[in-house]
Image 1 (cartoon, rainbow, N blue to C red):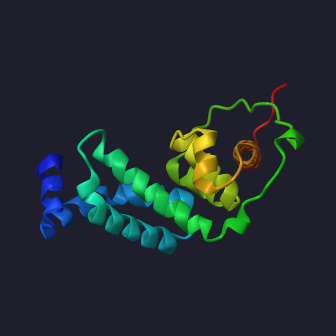
Image 2: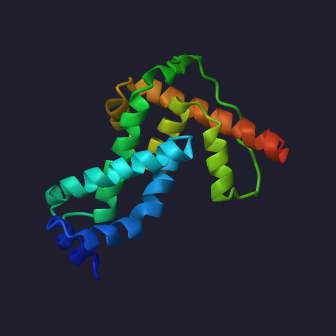
Image 3: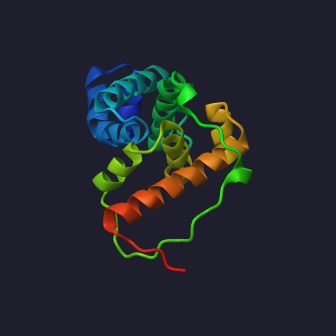
Amino acid sequence: MSEAHIIAACKKQDRKAQNVLFQAYAPLMLSICRRYLRKNELAEDVMIHGFHRILSKIDSFNNKGSFEGWMKRIVINECLMELRKNKSKYLTVSIDDIVVDPKVEWDHRLEYEELLALLDDLPDGYRTVFNLYVIEGFKHREIAEQLGISINTSKSQLILARRKLQTMVKKKYDIRISA
């Protein structure tokens, strides 16, 4: 069954097509949720809510652009709504107070699970902005609007996330800084 046929069947609320859609995309959507949310159970719950929203709003997909991209956007928004419940975890730091460390020279490539573990150790605000900017490709203006923070806060969260990740990687792999 092609993606177009699955979408058309889902628009008619065909349970088999909905199951095919879920089976095809659940691993990807769960990995997105997992990047934003620390707890596996919470990530699974948010993914299920995301699929509920996808299936209830599938009539609004107009076959322009990527269906997968459309679904990702919904799932990311579900993750952000979950994080907004705990907005107090976002830190506000003036971007003027941040000094960036020198770059690390290294050849080691992080495996997905290693990266996920490192991201888990970031504070929620750092992790969310890092995911939105680095992985999802959002601009700071878009991130600020999505999270209800200033553009400078988004920028500072990214800088602090990178700095913390850099420190964690240096410590984990005993990497030295080159001048």
